[in-house]
Image 1 (cartoon, one colour):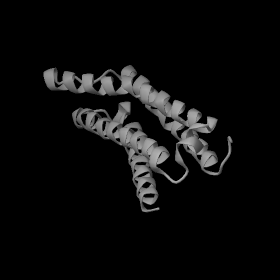
Image 2 (image 1 turned 90 degrees about the vertical axis):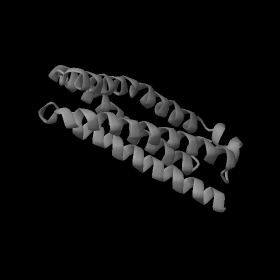
Image 3 (image 1 turned 60 degrees about the horizontal axis):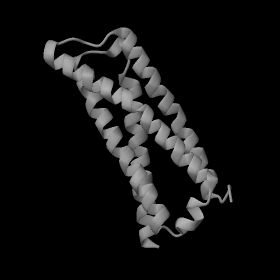
Amino acid sequence: MLLETLLAYVHWLAIFTMVTFLASEAALCRVEWMNARIVERLARVDMLYGIASIVVLATGLARSYWGAKGLGWYWTNPLLHGKVTLFVVIGLMSIKPTLTFLRWRKALRASGALPAEDEVRRTRKTVMVQAHLVPIVALLAVFLARGFGK
């Protein structure tokens, strides 16, 4: 019981952290706000978003292995497969913004150059799509927790 409670707590804490940093990326990645400090901050925020995402995945897997319901209950439910698949899709989508933020930071440090406006807009759009997919993962989680999909 204590392990299940702690796993749930760390999982939810990681989810809230991940969402916070994803929302921060979306807020910072704007043409009208772009400056050297924002470029540096985006790279840091994205790193924290990535770390939080890894913790979300790790604690989710830990809950399925050591949680009260167990592997058999979770991994035979198609909702879990949908949830994990969508989470992985979001993670794969985040690769391009991550590489972009790192490239922006490298260019800034090398020459002081800020990113082009159209690139900022495209990157923000990708971040926003990710941010809009996360609530669907949460919806699947709610249905899964209530026993749907069995």
